[in-house]
Amino acid sequence: MAVKILIVEDDTPLAMMMASLLTRAGCDVQGAHTGEKAMRLAQESKFDLITLDIDLPDMSGFEICRELKQRHLSRHTPIVLISGRLCEEDRQRAGFCFTGFVSYPASKRSLVLIFELGLWWNLAA
Image 1 (cartoon, rainbow, N blue to C red):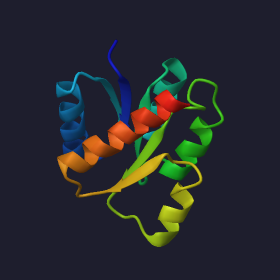
Image 2 (cartoon, rainbow, N blue to C red):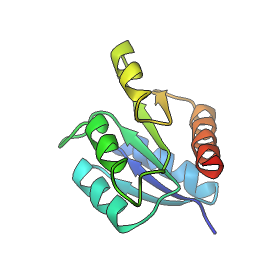
Image 3 (cartoon, one colour):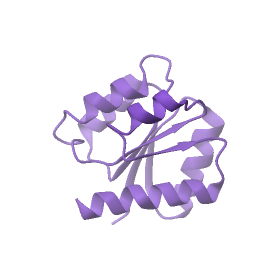
Image 4 (cartoon, rainbow, N blue to C red):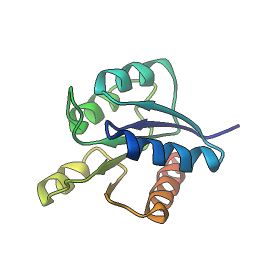
Protein backbone atom coordinates (compact mmCIF):
# COMPACT_ATOMS: atom_id res chain seq x y z
CA MET A 1 0.00 0.00 0.00
CA ALA A 2 1.37 3.40 -0.98
CA VAL A 3 2.26 6.01 1.60
CA LYS A 4 -0.41 8.72 1.57
CA ILE A 5 0.90 12.30 1.74
CA LEU A 6 -0.94 15.63 1.80
CA ILE A 7 1.03 18.58 0.42
CA VAL A 8 -0.36 21.93 1.62
CA GLU A 9 1.42 24.59 -0.42
CA ASP A 10 0.23 27.68 -2.32
CA ASP A 11 3.44 28.00 -4.36
CA THR A 12 2.38 25.95 -7.38
CA PRO A 13 5.89 25.22 -8.80
CA LEU A 14 7.12 24.04 -5.38
CA ALA A 15 3.99 21.93 -4.82
CA MET A 16 4.39 20.35 -8.25
CA MET A 17 8.08 19.58 -7.64
CA MET A 18 7.31 17.93 -4.28
CA ALA A 19 4.37 15.99 -5.73
CA SER A 20 6.48 14.78 -8.65
CA LEU A 21 9.33 13.70 -6.37
CA LEU A 22 6.99 11.82 -4.03
CA THR A 23 4.91 10.26 -6.81
CA ARG A 24 8.08 8.91 -8.44
CA ALA A 25 8.97 7.41 -5.06
CA GLY A 26 5.66 5.53 -5.11
CA CYS A 27 3.64 7.76 -2.77
CA ASP A 28 -0.05 8.58 -3.13
CA VAL A 29 -0.04 12.40 -3.11
CA GLN A 30 -2.89 14.86 -2.71
CA GLY A 31 -2.52 18.62 -2.68
CA ALA A 32 -4.20 21.68 -1.21
CA HIS A 33 -3.37 25.32 -1.90
CA THR A 34 -5.46 26.73 0.97
CA GLY A 35 -5.89 25.92 4.64
CA GLU A 36 -9.60 25.38 4.12
CA LYS A 37 -9.02 22.68 1.50
CA ALA A 38 -6.31 21.07 3.64
CA MET A 39 -8.69 20.86 6.61
CA ARG A 40 -11.39 19.30 4.44
CA LEU A 41 -9.04 16.71 2.94
CA ALA A 42 -7.63 15.82 6.38
CA GLN A 43 -11.17 15.35 7.66
CA GLU A 44 -12.05 13.03 4.76
CA SER A 45 -8.90 10.85 4.68
CA LYS A 46 -6.12 9.65 6.95
CA PHE A 47 -2.66 10.66 5.74
CA ASP A 48 0.69 9.13 6.67
CA LEU A 49 2.40 12.53 6.43
CA ILE A 50 1.35 16.15 5.90
CA THR A 51 3.66 18.88 4.59
CA LEU A 52 2.46 22.34 5.45
CA ASP A 53 3.45 25.82 4.30
CA ILE A 54 3.50 28.49 7.01
CA ASP A 55 2.00 31.25 4.82
CA LEU A 56 -1.23 30.32 3.06
CA PRO A 57 -3.73 32.78 1.62
CA ASP A 58 -6.49 32.02 4.11
CA MET A 59 -4.77 30.95 7.36
CA SER A 60 -1.37 30.33 8.92
CA GLY A 61 0.35 26.97 9.01
CA PHE A 62 0.50 27.20 12.81
CA GLU A 63 -3.27 27.62 12.98
CA ILE A 64 -3.82 24.66 10.65
CA CYS A 65 -1.39 22.48 12.59
CA ARG A 66 -3.11 23.20 15.92
CA GLU A 67 -6.48 22.37 14.40
CA LEU A 68 -5.23 19.16 12.77
CA LYS A 69 -3.69 17.97 16.05
CA GLN A 70 -7.14 18.25 17.69
CA ARG A 71 -8.89 16.09 15.08
CA HIS A 72 -9.20 12.33 15.40
CA LEU A 73 -7.91 11.37 11.94
CA SER A 74 -4.87 13.65 11.99
CA ARG A 75 -4.03 13.76 15.71
CA HIS A 76 -0.99 11.47 15.34
CA THR A 77 -0.03 12.33 11.77
CA PRO A 78 3.48 13.76 11.41
CA ILE A 79 3.37 17.30 10.03
CA VAL A 80 6.43 18.83 8.40
CA LEU A 81 6.55 22.62 8.11
CA ILE A 82 7.99 23.84 4.81
CA SER A 83 8.62 27.56 4.46
CA GLY A 84 10.80 30.14 2.82
CA ARG A 85 10.70 32.40 5.87
CA LEU A 86 11.61 30.64 9.07
CA CYS A 87 12.84 33.11 11.66
CA GLU A 88 13.98 31.98 15.11
CA GLU A 89 10.54 32.64 16.62
CA ASP A 90 8.92 30.49 13.91
CA ARG A 91 11.40 27.69 14.56
CA GLN A 92 10.56 27.74 18.27
CA ARG A 93 6.82 27.79 17.59
CA ALA A 94 7.23 24.96 15.07
CA GLY A 95 8.75 22.70 17.71
CA PHE A 96 5.49 22.61 19.66
CA CYS A 97 3.35 21.32 16.81
CA PHE A 98 5.40 20.12 13.87
CA THR A 99 7.43 16.91 13.57
CA GLY A 100 10.10 18.79 11.62
CA PHE A 101 10.70 21.73 9.34
CA VAL A 102 12.47 22.55 6.11
CA SER A 103 13.47 26.00 4.94
CA TYR A 104 13.48 26.42 1.17
CA PRO A 105 14.92 26.66 -1.28
CA ALA A 106 15.73 23.11 -0.19
CA SER A 107 17.54 20.46 -2.12
CA LYS A 108 15.64 17.39 -3.24
CA ARG A 109 17.80 15.34 -0.87
CA SER A 110 16.75 17.57 2.07
CA LEU A 111 13.10 17.03 1.19
CA VAL A 112 13.55 13.27 0.91
CA LEU A 113 15.29 13.16 4.30
CA ILE A 114 12.58 15.14 6.06
CA PHE A 115 9.86 13.01 4.48
CA GLU A 116 11.67 9.88 5.64
CA LEU A 117 11.95 11.37 9.14
CA GLY A 118 8.24 12.16 9.18
CA LEU A 119 7.31 8.69 7.98
CA TRP A 120 9.66 7.05 10.50
CA TRP A 121 8.06 9.13 13.25
CA ASN A 122 4.63 7.90 12.14
CA LEU A 123 5.74 4.26 12.13
CA ALA A 124 7.34 4.58 15.57
CA ALA A 125 4.22 6.13 17.15
